[in-house]
Length: 488
Image (cartoon, rainbow, N blue to C red; front, side, top):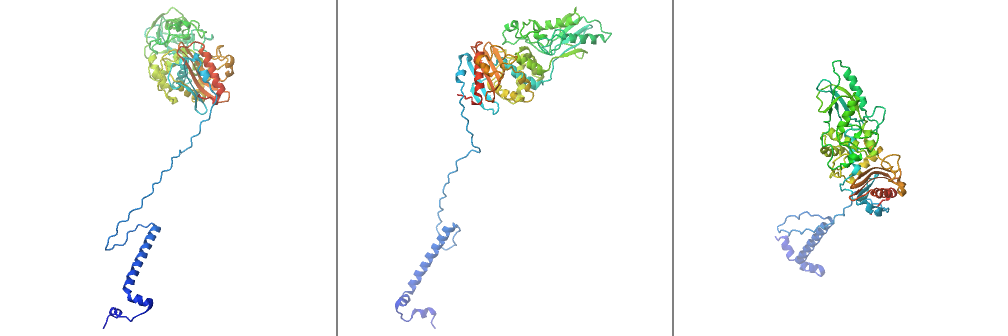
């Protein structure tokens, strides 16, 4: 019996295409298989291309070559974009360059800031620390308002001495204490009077019948330590009446005339005060200096005007005595010490609460008379931003500033803001400064366009009194420009 394969081996002859297929059947089958293989492979490739499939092919006896991965195109990162678009600065066109080039300003520094925005509009060496002259009183006042507070009063006391018949007058740093009789006003408004203290002492002494008559007076000045005169001060200031020696006990700022702002000072303010109190007690007392015994009974006390009043009196006429009094009291309250050498730590520490960088600041005195003080104009413009906003109790300081063309103070004098500069009258609130090697002015301007500006101007070096005119003219230029002031 033949197998089917054998049957197919001897088929009947055919004609046409069927005969051809029959004769070459094996070849056709091989060709058809190859075609199917090609078609299936093409379909797989096409499907893979369409779907991006990366699945491995089924295992076979013959390993397939590994497919070469297509390169991944590199995409350029997007250009960085700021989180917020930077606003373009406005184009300002009001220039004071010609005024700032005035030779009378000598070594010139200045800065002007828009008090509404904090933007620096004008700057010439604004970050360099230099001598301030009496503008230093602004820093002393700001430190006093922070450390002492506006209500603080300095106290002068009388206590029992260590010996029978002895009383001790203890200076508490009130340099405004007056020897004029109560009811007669000295230069310092609201000052305490020695005769009031003497009356309290006599009454308290007489209240104890075991007390013998008062025969001796001891003066305790230990609240301040020496030296009494700063090495940077010209000794001529004593005779000219601008500055006393600084001691914890004196009367009327040690003036010869207690009613005048400028009056010659003595070589021994302690002796002047001691004699005045001895006379108020009835006279005939021996006078010496020593420290009061601890724990002894108090016989009387008087107090100065509050710091708020003292600051305004110091600023309006640039009184050096009150400024030194406040500076020393600030240093003591700040635990920095009670001498000139303590003022750096005391005042700089007292300013710390305002949050303004004090780098490079040098404090040698509280009044600005020393040429060795150093404060930058930028510090002053920043502090005046807070003064203008009346932050905390800095409104006290603002209210004490002289006003151009005002009824009183150092900017009301005939040589200030005169002529064309009177256009800024009533709009400039500022502290003046003058020493032999510098003229300064710093404060707040209410500009013509309504913009509040804070400013500081230094004319340092080889200067004369006409520097004041150049400073006033430049300040008036700031007033006219307002927020349109350009730094060019």
